Picture: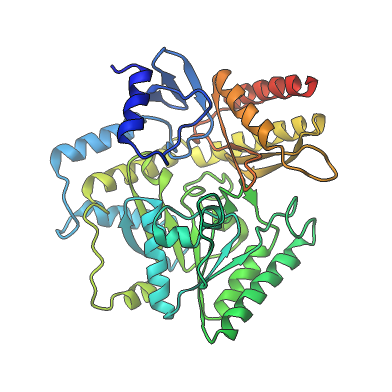
Length: 431
């Protein structure tokens, strides 16, 4: 086994310098199991941030399913195979009626890129409405519609067909409080009007129902429902990006968009879908899928292969068999409550938001200016790591502690997280 210095040296020589490492002192992780990761020196870490390993690291049933299918067959989708059709049916059974047609891909980025292609073909327009602070993937087409990237370091800004709505943050955003919905919805109205003034039509409104890189942000009540109606009335399609928040993580619903009482035209999914295996999908209506069938075949060498479908089906089965959606609701509610108690004791915690096991703790320096406590967030993330608990920070100002563990997380795990977080904040308060 290579030592850490050798690994770092090889990374510097052979890997892109734009690929970062987590934490001031990076971890050399060699093994995972359940909600835990293990360093080369044997130290155990409670993983409270890896939402990709949705049902736990190295879940034995998922590992076995991949191994079993790999021994039998793994090929492309140009042959009749029951695994892909059975999985497509199982997946669409989890969605509202009408969302019946699947395109299988390998990553959330691939899924969102394909969703844009489908929407642009259907509407014959590229005019896209997005939320500021949003991130939808690493392909060029998605950097263009991701303000989190094109508006950040190294970014070149949005192209002229991308129409950006202020991040709908009712705590520290442009419009605040209970009536913030009105202000953000009005920006959607104005974006549509601007598109029409260019003699264009709306193509798509793409959004997460609960923003990830925006800081685990819960949208103002009614914003998404009203925005979907406006976009549809303007002839556009509504795309729900479920890459981070789907598959029962919300607890009270299987999909994030259901928490906002909307039904999208296109749904994209990935990350947790394969529990670490590269698997993603686009699901849409038959009408939209038929429109996309214009003579140019959509083919993906690996998307929907038998191994991926076996893994995806097993993830669905495990969520059901182990009652993990209900666990996300129970443990997530408990953890949110405990964090809100912590907030009542410490002014540095400005807000606690989230649903299920997708939670953000926003840190501020004072209650009046709401100045983001970015440095403090970074300090806490690294000290939590030293205490054996892995979280990270996010949001446009990187002042939101991000908590999104495997959904097998327990109340005892939640207690461990909160106790350690409280101790670290107490120490910071003394400085």
